[in-house]
Amino acid sequence: MIKINLYPSLKRKKDRRIEKELIAYILIFILMGGGILYTNHILNSKIDKLNAIKKKKMQENMFLMTRLVILNKYKKDLKTLKQKIKTIKKIRRRQNLPVLYLNELVKHFIKNKLWINYISLRNNKSTSKMEIRGVALDNQILADYIKSLRDSPYIKEANLKRAIKRRIKGYDLISFDFTLKTKSITSNLKNTNSNKK
Image (tube, rainbow, N blue to C red):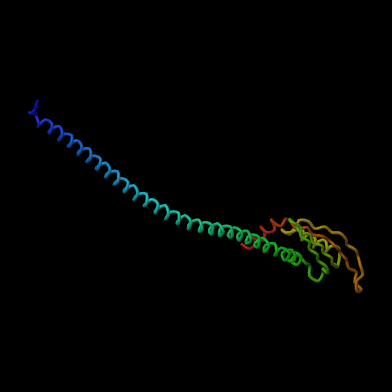
């Protein structure tokens, strides 16, 4: 028995539909693959750009770190120099104090009635102590001299240790020995600074 297909167009339509669907799937697959490849290409180029930026930033960071080390060294050196300058200024101000003390001795000196033949100066951290020996014509001249030294802004104490009458080269003179204690060095430094102004 022979069968004749009277509906050949239906099978062809079905085959064409399958072909169209297959072509559509292939096109979708190609488009998706192309999209994935394109996206991958864009992401890779962005990654490359970011890596280049990262490398540049790391180089800048290394450069800045070396500059920071140098800057910190300069800051440390500057701090050390400031401390040294402060110490030198302090020493220079203290250096002038013995001259000020001697100036006070001379300023209150009674000319041709009092003679000093020995001066000793010892410095402590905060004050100085002076020992003075000499001769005076009489006790009143010695008392006036010590009193005027006590009134000095630099002298804290003036204490007579010894006053003995002696005959020196035919003259009756008073041989004396007294100590001076200066005011604190910081207050004397303030006095010298205010006197300079």
